[in-house]
Amino acid sequence: MSIEVDPSSEFADYAHPESLVSTEWLQEHLGRPGLVVVESDEDVLLYETGHIPGAVKIDWHTDLNDQVQRDYVDGERFAELLSAKGIARDDTVVFYGDKNNWWAAYALWVFTLFGHPDVRLLDGGRDKWIAEGRDLTTEPTRREPVEYPIVERDDTIVRAFKDDVIAHLGKPLIDVRSPEEYSGERTEIPGYPTESALRAGHIPSAASVPWARAAAPDATFKRRPELETIYLGEAGLKPGDDVIAYCRIGERSSHTWFVLTHLLGFENVRNYDGSWTEWGSAVRVPIVTGSEPGKIPLR
Amino acid sequence: MTSQPFDDDRAGLAPALAEIRDDFLALEQPDRLQLLLEFSNELPELPERYRDHPDLLERVVECQSPVYIFVEVDDSNIVHLHATAPRESPTTRGFASILVQGLAGLSADEVLAVPDDYPQTIGLTQAVSPLRIRGMSALLGRTKRQVREKLVA
Image 1 (cartoon, each protein chain N blue to C red):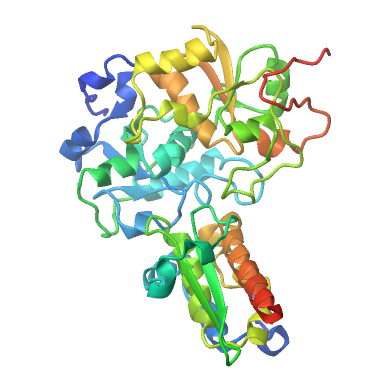
Image 2: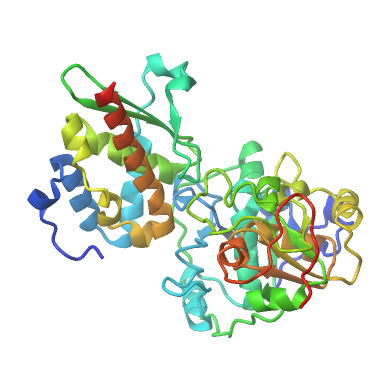
């Protein structure tokens, strides 16, 4: 049972306006049966300091990643997780989080791997909700466990592996990291040196479009005309293109994946979650340094 | 990982650090996060005299959130660790607070003797993730480095 979409006029231009909800809409719909609000943050304790009333927490690392192998949880574990959180397969799930919804977009993307039908982002995320003085609570959310079906993860539609990227060379790639990471001046961003790679630079031919260019100062997404100027104008994407986005570990590129897929309507966008922490440490993959995209090596 | 008993004498672990570790290990995983949150809320404000001296504060760049530390070694050779991190970064604040409380009153030599793997032994790697725990290791490492520098100076 899906909940009606947010009819806000500011979303109307997007390819899939149903993928976003505003803070006003969420406030009005809190507690509605069939709606589950999920908070996903970079900081594993932020939810505990205060969250949207009724929201459950899903942590990108401890909940969604396999704890041994570098991969996402499997269908069985995902079903256990969602069952325990009280999320049914036909629930509308609205994600929000800190840092411009980085991790919220990442969680939404992981839910997409399992084909959860109705997933949406809170435009502006946690920051906007708080900036508007809306309610937060430290009251733990208790939802009755439900039966979530075991659905096998589909890694073929929105996820790319290293070999997929190699096969994709020649088609558009978007590098969403900082210009310094792109050029190879550094292998990490300030504050994240533990997620490093052995070599620096970018995948040949990738266009540099730092993820934050899609975000407005209040953490909402920029509106469609501005996004088109950036991604179709400057980055040169054409409607119908197959695109792969990457960053370091796939979280910032989830944000860009959301923009390209849900806001601009590209139908074949994949997130390369191995990203630079894999590519920059892999043996014999081509790397370009400097601020130019560079050429694809002859094979 | 954390199931083995620790030999505190061998490890040279200060009593306050040992107590903090035991408190965490005595709890189930979700409760460990709550205890970390309590530590987070207990992180003291920077002393007045440092608030207007950003130049004295060292950024711990290994932490995902902005956290700054400053170490003093007083005339009695006692170490004072000061740390500041924003409210929006409760995990980092919690890590800093554990060290501020755990190192309180220790001499320079005692701080330098704290095992470098202390952050991995307090039962948070599963609740918080090993990746995030590295931020605490960096806090400890930088604290020790500042102590060494102060001893030389």
